[in-house]
Length: 180
Image 1: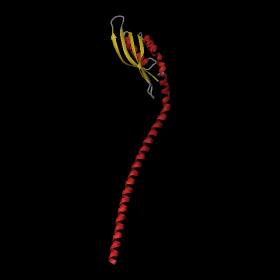
Image 2: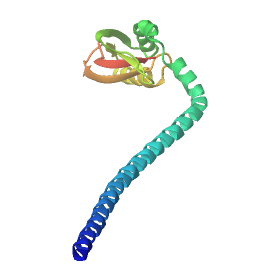
Image 3: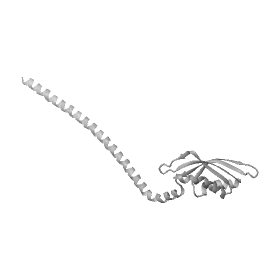
Image 4: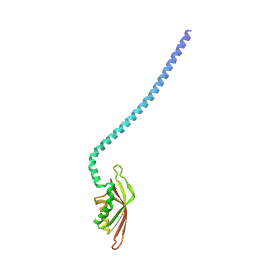
């Protein structure tokens, strides 16, 4: 009977030890996985905080630049008319042509208007034709697109023909005028 009692207590003790080891292994495994998940969450949160810090820094530098950009915005507003201000573009184009001794006409293309978006200006496409001497046409195209105040424009393409005689040379082309 003593031997049976001893064996029973031995098996109970070994069962308790084995159960404790299994429970400890499970607990260590669970907490290790939980700690890894928490570490991943902390790393993700830190990366998010770092990105937000960089965004705030960028925003602060942009807000600082706003005061520096104000004079440039004023100059751009003087340079670029609003969309309704482009109505007089054809007349302006003709007057610039007269200054260079060139007969010039410009007409808007109705389907080529792009509205301003953000800090990008709007634009409207136009066609033009001009007649005069070759040297006058060259000076006119340079003056109208680069030097003449009033409108900011770009000539995108043109065809040049030179006819002998009093008719002189002719330019037919396309361009873009910008507005705010």
